Image 1 (spheres, helix red, strand yellow):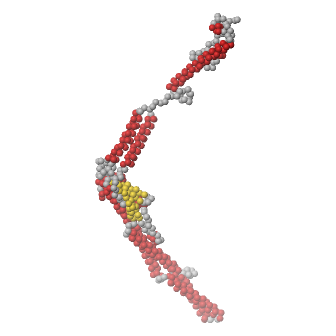
Image 2 (cartoon, one colour):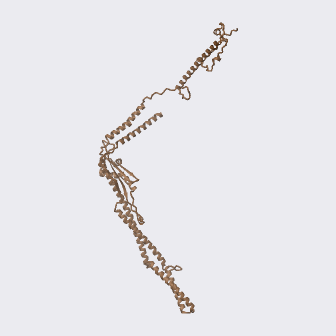
Image 3 (cartoon, one colour):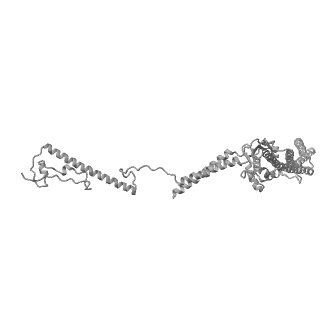
Length: 486
């Protein structure tokens, strides 16, 4: 039996994956280390050991043991390689974190540590306590300890007007009365807020003294600081006197504040009286305008009627005619009678011409009668303006006289009607000037308060707290936005 070499029948050593990083998991130990089925244990231990045949079971046991050893070495190599990869990934995460989507082997980061109280948190809480809680507490202390009580007197009124129509409306039989006037209401609304009214009431009631009863040294915010200028007093008036105007209904509501109930009522009553006087002045101006307009219309109507009557009188004197209607009737009757006589004369002449000769004196007399009647008819027709050529020998045609008379009569009648309407308008304006056409109607007289309702401490405190919180929130948000930009 030929003896193999010392290393020819020994199994090839499997490279250790831990020592050789190039070892791959695809190595198959059974194929990389082939065994001679005739190899004996003695030959595996040494070349001088005599070979002994192995049984089938021994050979299978050897192959199984070798396969298990190869698998163990491969698993160890895989574990070493995985540990190296995890170590490299952890180093990369520390230098440049990689999203979890790019590597599935990145371990989950531990939870963040609880936020610690920082300096900015202390500043926010401190500013809240100072600017919100502190200001609200200061306002509450001032409202309940220093602010003086104020009483409120209310009044309500509206402006009523009555308007009379003009002469043209009276001529047509139309006269209107109106209810309230929104323009007068707007004027009164502005008048109550004017410096003129403030000065008038200050001269009468001494507003500076009344509104300084709240003790400006104790309550410097809501009390008036005398003496002050009229502009300062007017500004303080705007806060103490509230006027509400409802343009839809024409109603005015007045709310006056003072440090005593009687002072508030006196100021409200004074405002009502001065407003009534102002409306009366407007009424007087309106009445004077209406009376002057009616007087001018009446004077014009009188002058027009006088001229119309004088023109008609001159016409009658020049033509010696009182009424052309009667004269026309006489002239028309005369012309009709002459035409009848002319017709009879023509008939008589025709009869004589048939029964007598041409030299018969009766025929000549009949013809002369006919000629005379025709001449008279022509003259009468010329007087009436009915001539063939329209010539009247220098005399005015009677038809023209009738036309001129009718024109003058129409002018006189229109002047008389205008005079009647103007006289009625003037009488109505005079009657209107004797009564009050524009006045103030009070639906709520100035009241006398029993309890001080100003200042409204809970509502005022709520507004102070709300606006303080809003301002603080805006400032904090601006601070955080500037910090984030850095």
